[in-house]
Length: 170
Image (cartoon, rainbow, N blue to C red; front, side, top):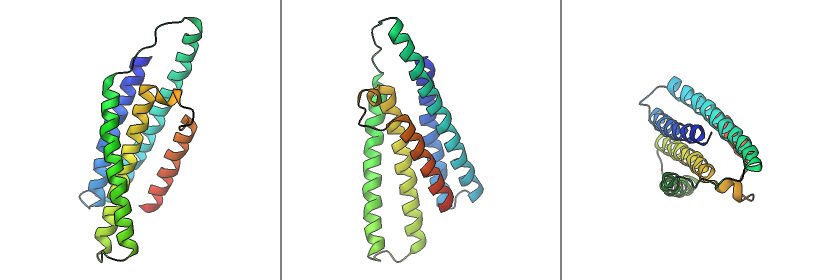
């Protein structure tokens, strides 16, 4: 089951990356709005499927741990590497988003079209990086150990909220 979960998470990370790039290119009018809306719908569907697969795997793994005390598998180091890279992207994009937000509040940037496209692009980039970081944390097993972090239900709630916000934005 762990192999299926890892494959699902890998496919999900690749899909989030590709769809984020497509969405950003759509914001900059390289693709039309139909491509953007379909990309967000596909992203939402893939997010839901990946979360269901990972959550179902937790329940299956939970049962097998009580029956037999096996040595726990150590997570692949690739998840940590991907998490660190996307965490740097997340921090950079959110910082730039805050900077552009302040510049927009003080009306330093006069061209509203470029401002809105930049804010949208950074928002998409930050959201995609956040999803990838949460997926890597789940694969590393760090979401299980630290209950102070987000649960699967709160991740699903955030994904639904983000989907609704993006639907209203476009």
